[in-house]
Length: 166
Image (cartoon, rainbow, N blue to C red; front, side, top):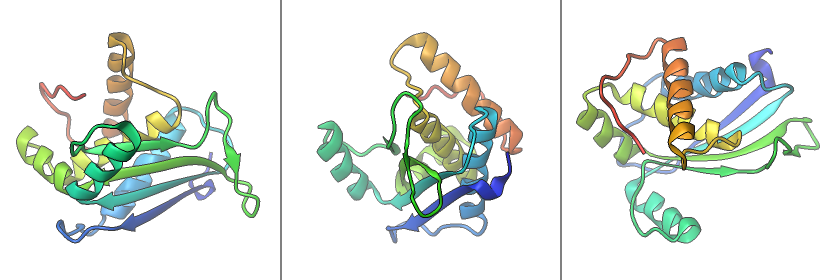
């Protein structure tokens, strides 16, 4: 699979956290790495939006009835491996990833790793959700964690010791 088949549209809709140089490229690499690991076939499109805590809290309230800020939300556009296709490009539209950059920065400090690693991890986590993965059952949670850490390793982002996520 070639990376030019993967279109990652990134929008920064917040002003609270400065987006470091290279962050957009890292997000694109994470999306590509997950799709490569999962042997995803054909062109794909993913939308990634950087928001603040207030914006993600509004989305979490609206779509999940949870009036709290969270780190990342995933909005899959397909189910059972079937996705809408962009008629102009032929790309399968996998869905939307929304990351709270404020929460990601807080968590990177809390867990003692880089901001880049946290955003990379949240991106990989969310793209797995777009592909149908979940973590409601303990085994699914472990399987998802292994895949996320594999992607972090592929991209050369430091490993985490003792980090227990949701």
